[in-house]
Length: 179
Image 1 (cartoon, rainbow, N blue to C red):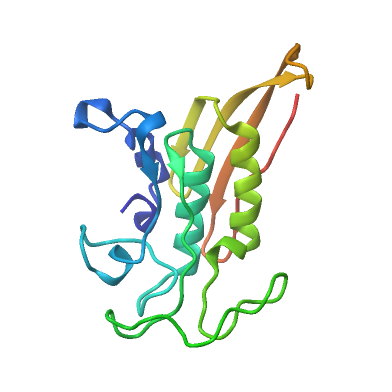
Image 2: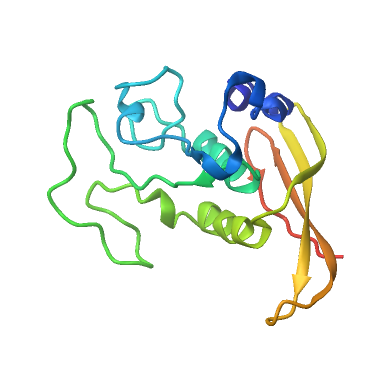
């Protein structure tokens, strides 16, 4: 609801141990999976890139947040378009990368916005979220990263920034700034 409603600040309380949530080292996090994107098992209101009512933009925003946040072991969906919730996968294979998937496949993991956020997540792994600022269609925070030489000697730290802002016609995600 935070993403659909444009109130990105409400994502700030997404992790709360008081709710009985597992700590981030023991949690698998994802935007959707093959069951809940079809309305099977789990609550409604799932962001999806494949179903009859899918919204690719909202899905990309959800995936960007998931990958930028420090909580959990992240999983990205790679699915196919469907009209019927019991429909199986397409008969043909997706086209090879870097071509568009085609043949009924969605291949969310190939979308440039998601691939770039995976890179962001890999750089920021093990860091915490700091300096949270969010509101109507914008969200920003920082993650402190340690700079290490290959043999483990620390040479300092840097700040990795995440900014997500949107308008009715465009959105921007994953701006990196190293200081």
